[in-house]
Amino acid sequence: MNESFSQDIFILKELVRKGIKLKYRRSYLGILWSLLEPLLTMVVLTIVFGTLFGIKDKTFPVYILAGRLLYSLFSQGTKEALKSIRANASMIKKVYVNKLLYPLSAILFNYVIFLISLVVLAITALCFKVYPTVYLFQIVIPMLNLLLLSAGVGLIMSTIGVFFRDMEYLWNVVLMLIMYTCAIFYKPEKLLNSKFAMILKGNPLYCIISNFRSCVFGEPMNYKYMLYSFGFGVFTILVGLFMFRKLEDRFILSI
Image 1 (cartoon, rainbow, N blue to C red):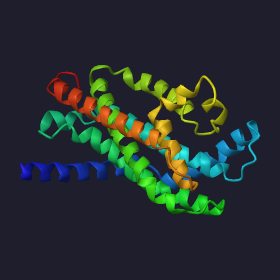
Image 2 (image 1 turned 180 degrees about the horizontal axis):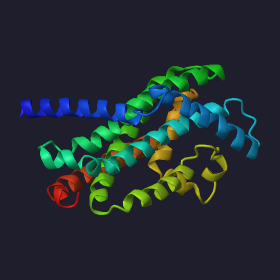
Image 3 (image 1 turned 30 degrees about the vertical axis):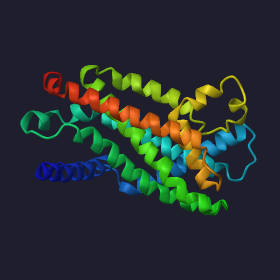
Image 4 (image 1 turned 90 degrees about the vertical axis):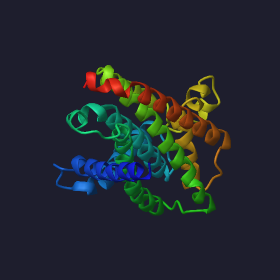
């Protein structure tokens, strides 16, 4: 069992490394793009929505960037996981590899890119005089919750994606809805005090982003958000594992 586990870990590392290489294979900037892309997106969103909503807060770019980085990981990771089994169909048909490793590697290589992009957030925060406080040490909690949620949803999507190929297009629509309920480019104070509050609070990704921002801006986390997002993440992991293991033997018939 230990030998099998060690082999799975080795294969997982190789798949993560392969995923990062393939993502930037035809890019002249390579992994540097993972730093430039969120920065350029932040500039555009700040100009458009800062002007549209008349926001005068000088730290608004940091607010946008923090939300955008977390949403990008969830979005890209789950989309890659959704396609992971079909994308590796030729290998699955030729050799036996623990199929669970494919969606997990899709989440993990995007998580590595997310961790690298945090360098941009740190530099941007310092430029806009958002300095670290003791609350920054709590940031590992929303980051862990984000990984759990992404992995759980990724496993569910990877299973559905094998049998229902249109899910790839439907998931893009769902992700758009999730994005608008994550308060990435607007401040949700008014919504949180209205009848629409449950739309935000019921979105575990919004809860994670909100707590992540609190850590960055030197504020205490909302522990209700933390417990809810953690519980939701664990739930999706359990559901995803159950679905995946239940149906993985039928993957070969549909890929």
